[in-house]
Image (tube, rainbow, N blue to C red):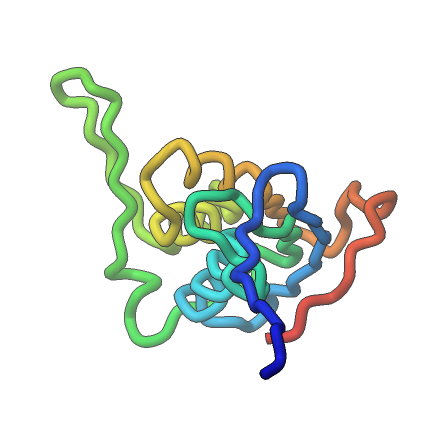
Length: 147
C-alpha cells in the first residue's frame, strides 16, 4: 500500500500570490463582464481558492466608457444614491451615468457581486477602472485576461 497523503492546501495571507490582469471592456455586456471580473477578484479562478482569505488578483479595466447594455437598459436602468438626508435620494439612468461617471457603471456592477463584508471591501480595492486605453500600472507588468 502506498502511503501518499493528499492534503487540501488552505491559503493564507502569507502564501497568496497576486497577479495583475488587464481587461478590455470595449463592446462587452456589463453584467457578463463584471461577473467574470468579480470571479477573478475573489480568487475563484485559482486552485488554491480559500473562502475566508482574500486570494484574488488585481484587475485593471480599460475602456470602461465603451461597455454596452442589452435591450432598453440604457434608458430604463436606474442608479439610485441616497445621502441619508430627507430629500437626498438621487436617480440617474445608465445614459446619464455614462455621460457623467462612466467608471461607476463597472464599479457598481462589480461591487454588487462581491461579498458585503470586510473581505469584500478588501477585494474591491484591487479593482482599477479607467475610461480610456491608458493606465498607470505598467510597472506591475499586467497580463491580458481572456475570458
